[in-house]
Length: 499
Image (cartoon, rainbow, N blue to C red; front, top):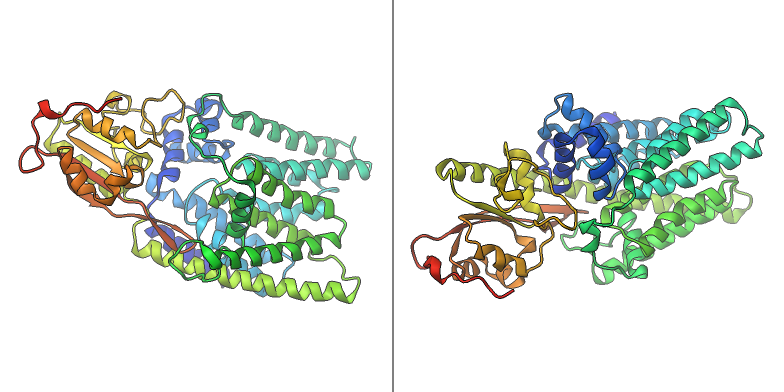
């Protein structure tokens, strides 16, 4: 009954969800490229192994429309939830509480990105973990697939694969046919993932990311995985004392988890699984949603250590504290799951579809007009248009419709503020702009700023991305060149700004 309710929730919210840039980017890459180009070239610019893109490539050719992309993430989440309910060693109330947690209940199940595969593969690995020495092939396959999901999963798979090798050596099975096949499978999948994710020298996305402060990035990573703030129903993002409470609770829970792991035989594996993502976050890079992979790994560590014996009263007391902390976590994240789902049902996560309709309607009336795009989110229209309509992207050629992250790409998905005035100086007839990338003075009063440049606001498309129940404004604005009225200006007066 709980699984049916969970599936109904995920499907119900997903039916209302409007896919955003990351969902459509992977889909368009899979739609418009051969499998070889997708896996061997474009996936590495996305900073991820190619398993999700391959699944999308197959789904596109099987006839699944973009509007149904959510069925893939929902299926992974529901299957993973079934494994947890059936096989996890936790008390029933904790197992069911996991279904309501934020990443199972919303972020990775409703939003169709490759992270949904973690919801399925990590519980599968945990369920197969006890038999990994005697029956290593199935376990190795899951570990190998996990390596091809994302960079954080790759790190976890590397730890799991190394531990499998050590266990096979310790059991003196290393030269048995099944063990050799399993290790070859896991290792081959890992090497393939490494090849697909190896970053090209001209990746323009990484060149535009700001450096992180290691301590701050680590604390934010922990909080986003566990307790992100105290007032979980608040519409305000992490800040001040509320954020401090979240960090404190997260560190305390992580400490109890480490204590549990230290009482069992898999302590080295458990600590490595927890340390690897944290170290990568501190030293390299992470985004808030990457914390969901860490959450899945925390579930894995809890799973394999739950049966550790309590050798003294302090261990038993620590176990009770851990159960209380996990219950609190599930309740607080469950509230954020509910809040996020309600917001998604009643709001617009992406403005791409209505903006695409407006562009196509304008195109029908102005077949020779020039349309320009500004900012990453403007490309959320591309799945909903039969061709690329943006004259400033590859000269308006019908394809491609996805963002190319190569450093030499003339159209920048993450534009600098000065690029806005340079774009308007080319005098396009219509400009679809992502408000988040406009210069700060234009953001404050877009209508007035547009009028000074000889444009007017034709339409604004409201949208708001959701993180832990907090709606983050993400609108698109359609600017039209004024041909009459107070904003109209003679073309000769529109001198381009200095470089």
